[in-house]
View 1 (cartoon, rainbow, N blue to C red):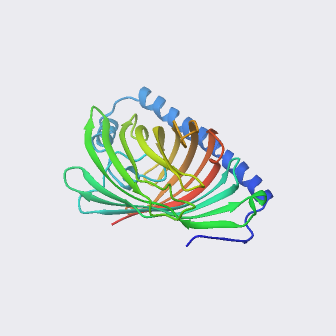
View 2 (cartoon, one colour):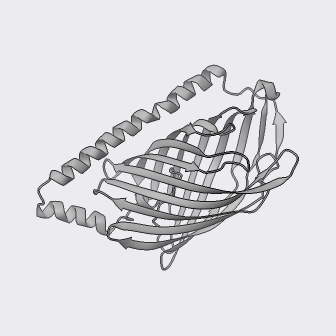
View 3 (tube, rainbow, N blue to C red):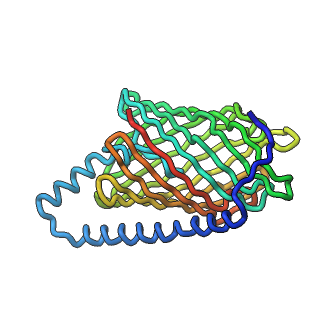
Length: 307
């Protein structure tokens, strides 16, 4: 369903408070960085006792152990770890964001679903059902809201294994234009990316992603234009204990539309492991640099469910 209707949406005061909240994510990132650096310093100065060595060896030998390591969300970068063969992982979420310099004032996105199924030999299949989106329009654009479904994607990931402490993987995704006119990109899109992760200590890890995408943009006149973007991403993760994890991330694109330049966004968040098969997370992000029409800041929450 896609339509325009006049429904009250968050006020200007709400948007101001929301922007302030988004910027507070930097405080979370600073705390995570301090904790991580402290952990690294302690690890470097610690005496190598048998128990200490055994704990670090166990973490290094199995960097993909547990739900927190396997989940792709809430970061933009995917985990290099695949779902175990015969297991199913559902990742769901909601995101609300303010939009910079556009007729659209804010954008709500849900369910952000990613459905993953593990195959033998380090492979997994992925399905991304269409999101339901709600755009709140500025008064200058007539106000009200536009809602509808986005496009559908499917993909595959392969985990190559861990070599010298580095876990390596690659994945590919194809998107087909199944969405409403207001939210569909209008053409078939593709993405391929390499992923690498390294555990500096049992608690602190860094990962990187580099992808290339062929994308489309559907203009107001219905004309679809194709363009290419390179997508870098780096993530730092600090695991406080077996159930609680913090992360910070910077990601970007070399192009956001056929005639628009690059953008970079910073985000951070918290992940809580309720059980071995249920995770909850909260995220916030802020645009560091980019053209008009992108989310200037956003807040989201979600869950990961393993079966």
